[in-house]
Structure formats: structure tokens, C-alpha cells
Image 1: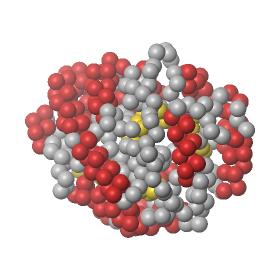
Image 2: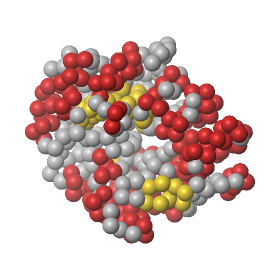
Image 3: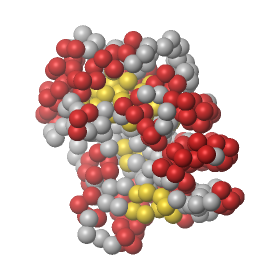
Length: 376
């Protein structure tokens, strides 16, 4: 991976207010570690989160397998059920390291596209939208509707969670994808690839629709969290006392750097502008080909590296890539297994690294914290 000069905009830690969460007495200390991480500094050890990537998606998987599509949607829409299920999963737990307990209001990754009229279909662990722009004239009916079923439902889930999770867990704002992922959901990902060649002007128009209302939508949910006295936090579970956002472009794995620079980069530049902390979700080597472009945006403060599955594991094959990010002064989240931890620590220096490790017990977590505390 070519190393380009990169000057990032180091975020300033905003003023905090008191947060009390059962089972996490060291909340403030954990926030200190995260603030240091953004600056590639270490107070006593790197931050570590004892949750596997996308673990929140698996919580109700077993109960939805044999349901009809209508029954699945009803379960996804049952705000009280979803919150109770989460609270049951953390009952009596101590939250060690930087494992902030978080209920994530979720109707799937295409929710943002659905706020403009697309229909969602619900599976066991995710949902997907049905393409709505079959003809370019269909773009005229794409209107953000604050009274639409999906907006009102995710608003309800957020409100119910804020009430039920008080003093027990943080509540995040829902996943918002205003970029090419949204355009791909409206148009169909494969079709959008052809569109970039055949109809670039129409793609640009859809992209403008996708980003135009983003700040308004973000501010609505950010306001709900602030009114409840909460910090800003998304599905990553990294709180901010400013404005936290997770920009991403999973669709970019299907396109060249030239097309990303033309269509994806302008949206990213606008998407991150008003945020205090932006952690870009880099989902695999296909997205990683756009690393230089992504890091050309000063407001991208950190990266989450997701290496993928199958041949893209184990993590050690990605050590040179992670070192390249580290050399640019960019903080990075790395997801690895307990078995990989020792070799990874031997190969890497800890500055600017945030570890995500799946565990099954508090005893495992305390043992891992001792090992990570000795990492120099």
C-alpha cells in the first residue's frame, strides 16, 4: 500500500458531564484512554473492547429463523422486546476495559435509504432494501419523510431505549449511511456500477439527494441522546461528548479509485464536516484500495479495520497494512482473537491501536487486561 503524506485533524476532547452506568465504575478512566487514543497516546494501556465485531446482530438470531417475514418484521419493530432482550444479556455483568454497554437502535444498514421511501425486508440478523429507482424518473419520488413508518419506528425504539436503559447502558443513534451505500440501495449495487459508466450525471443527482438531509436526520437523533443526558455514540460503542459519526462506503469495494474519487469522496467530505469524532468503517481489502483518498479528508480521525473472513483471516497477514496506517499517525481499531493477541503484540507497537477481542467470561477479560497492560 502506497504511503501518502497525511495530515489529519486531531480532535479536541470536548467538555464532559457525569455519566453513571451500573457495572462500569471506571467510565471516566475509559474515556481518558479513548481521548488519548485519538492522539496516538497511551495513559496506562491501549483501549480494549471485549466484544466481537457485529456481536449485536446475533442477539436474537435463533428466535427469528423459523418466523414468517411478517413475524420477523413485527419482532424487529417491537421496541420493548428488543430493549429487554439486550438488558437481559448484560444483567449482572461488569463492563471491563472500554466495553461500554450499548443498546443500538437498529433496523438494518439500509435504513437511511428507507427513510426516502424504499421498502425494507427483514431477515434473522439484518435487513435489506428493495431497489426503488428502477428508472431515472423514479428519483423524483425520493423524499425524506419524517412521518414515514421507518423514521417513526426507529425514533420510537430510541425513545423506549433511552427510558429503559437509564443508568444501565448507553443508547446509540441508529446506523446512517448517506453516501454511495444509500445510492446503491436505491438503485441496486450491480446496476450502480454500470450507471457510473453510462449515466454519471444521474448518479451525481442521486448522490446529492442522499447527502442533502443527512445533517438534519443526524441532528434529530443526536438531540434525543443529548436531551437524555447521554454522550454521542453509534454502533461501534465509542462514546463522544461531542458529535460522533461512523462514515463508511462498503459499496466502494466494487469500484475503482477513480470512481470513488469522483462519486464517493465528495459525499464523505460533506458527511464528516460537522462531527467532533469520525471513525471510518473500512470493511475489507476492497475498501482499503481507497485508503489514500479516505485519509485525504482531514476530519477522518481514525479507522476501523475489518479484515473479513475466510482467507482474509488471521490478523497477522495484515500487520504490514496496519503498520502503514500507524506510520501515517492514524489511530486504528483492530479486531482479533485471543489466540492471536500474543503474536500481534510482539509484532506491533501499541500507540494508536484500539483492540476488539471476543471473550466469554470476566476472568478471561481480567487476564487479557493484565497482558495488554504490559505491552510496550
